[in-house]
Length: 269
Image (tube, rainbow, N blue to C red):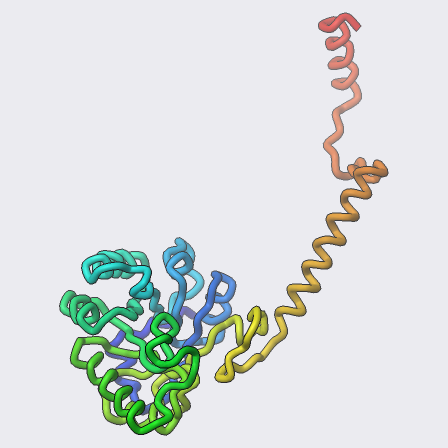
């Protein structure tokens, strides 16, 4: 049975009532698995959201897509891109640009998700890839940033690598939905990347992630099997073992004889 996809009003109504689940995934296969697992929210690259089959395989997942401020350009560029994203199947857009841009989008009724804490595209301003909010001063700046998003018209923010007591205190004092990536269970959703959950991340695995399967080993095994199969095929071709009669479509003998006789007349031998 197809799930009904939640609206923003539905998600807001759940604030403080239960933890939602959120994934970032990268393929239609992962989208289908997330749908079957009843994941609530997803952050998905545009090329996946815009695929003609995305809503066929993930009809019930509230889905955002986005660009960083480094990719999108001006506020008007962001607005035009956001319109295409919503027309293409997204439910909301991620925006890491200024609050002025967030306000520009929200005035046109674009559902906007912001980002606070460790924001990779702005990490140099907070000291690199490190936790944000470990001092009272930093925590208060985080609160002010969240309230700024609230005033600008966003409906949610990702809150990344922030002490849980800080995130929980902020969540209780804002109407925004807080989507936690390494910020504890006091927020409104728990957010992980599919590649971390499935164990195929290359390089560093973030502290806030949890690995549930070892797809990297499975992918390596499959690659070895691919190579072995291709080698066997090449060896069969070289030895004459492929193709076998069962792989071919035979010609009736009478038709074959007529063909060869006609060919001899046409070619002179």
